[in-house]
Image 1: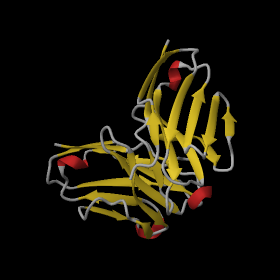
Image 2 (image 1 turned 120 degrees about the horizontal axis):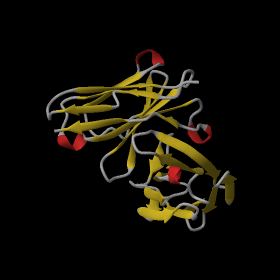
Image 3 (image 1 turned 30 degrees about the vertical axis):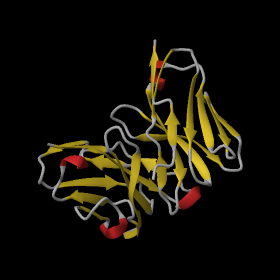
Amino acid sequence: EAGVTQFPSHSVIEKGQTVTLRCDPISGHDNLYWYRRVMGKEIKFLLHFVKESKQDESGMPNNRFLAERTGGTYSTLKVQPAELEDSGVYFCASSQLAGVLGEQFFGPGTRLTVL
Amino acid sequence: SQQGEEDPQALSIQEGENATMNCSYKTSINNLQWYRQNSGRGLVHLILIRSNEREKHSGRLRVTLDTSKKSSSLLITASRAADTASYFCATDAPGYALNFGKGTSLLVTP
């Protein structure tokens, strides 16, 4: 069974540019999460989808970040315009169940560098 | 706000030795999980311990949970070079998100 995949693995962009990250969850997992780890800090939750609906987007830092999950399959996270402090590793996770019973399976992450 | 916080931040040991990492958290939890991240790879789920459990084993891993002290420990016995990675504890947050700490960076030298 394929795990969570993310694309690209690395992205280097200049400040002010736009970047779109993609996450393909494990097939059949309705729950999809985005997290990010800024250098030297903890991994922080960004948002949670249940199918195509945003269940919780309390962790989204600001309106430069837009997440979508059209059709309830893969998800994209767009950063527009990117700022220096957006640099970090963006992880996607999926789970079949939500809440305390739902083990979250993580992808390899996308390392974003904003110059 | 940060929930889990690992200690130490970095740990260097030799193969065959045991490695112990600790995690403290602030609020009540339903369960606590430990994850490993190898360089350039994703987070791998190691073990989950529920709030009504005190100890759990999985292979060379042993996790304890003390809810009165709001702390957990991860013990890796007979460490191997392949155990070199960052280890994170994560607690469940309101909603369905996980709260992670900054992690412990473990280096196991041959």
